[in-house]
Length: 349
Image (cartoon, rainbow, N blue to C red; front, side, top):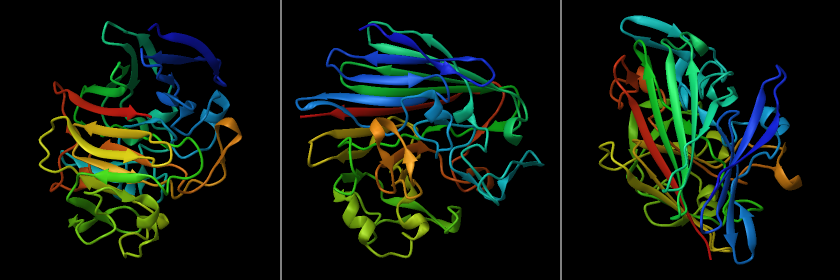
């Protein structure tokens, strides 16, 4: 199928923003804008009609509005950095604290608010959109000039893959992720969704989302045990001292036996529609977030998004890794290449 490019809008400084439609032979359609490398829709061609299974905005004005990173690419560092500060090679780097006193998702002007360069690189395997962004040295306090690249690809197996690559001209830290807000029913909330997470541990954190000293916690016997399918609604109702932050899930689940290889980490299904999703990633963790802080956000089709109306599965490294030598490293040196692959595969009917 041919990728379609359309004009999406104009930024206040006059730069033009585009929208790209990726399709496959099964009738699945994915729309992406190069502003924030943002997904605007994922249509599944079910027997009851097309269902859009990701929340967000279908106008540039919506993407520019004040919203919680809906469907954007996060960089340079996904998740939180404690006290908005870290040390690298003996030097302290102070960052803007957009979730005071910490930094969240790369700061107030992260990769989610940048206009990426776009190129159609589709081939016989399917539609492929290549997006690149050059982050200057010192942007949001991070050292080094970083060239970031992302390829969105849609194939006939209904797999939407995100392949990341980054290089730097001096030592820095990198932790890229996608902040998709999914709802497999295309309406209402996600409490009836069944979730499986193939993770024996989580990164335990305090009420501010910063990992505890003894961070790795077994999920057995807690509401975080999704090793067998469990209802999100039932788990949200369970009382547990670790489930108080934001009145819902907002924790990193640790991949079992992580070796940097692509592996299945999560499965989600909506019993009402039968729509399902699998998540594979090369990353050491996936952050489950149940949109606890989503409130009165005006989105597509006249919908107003509220808490628990979507779930996020953000493949990434652990929060605050730059300050935790006991965590997998997020350091990137000159001459090295940061690579990550995450795949969302969809099923319907």
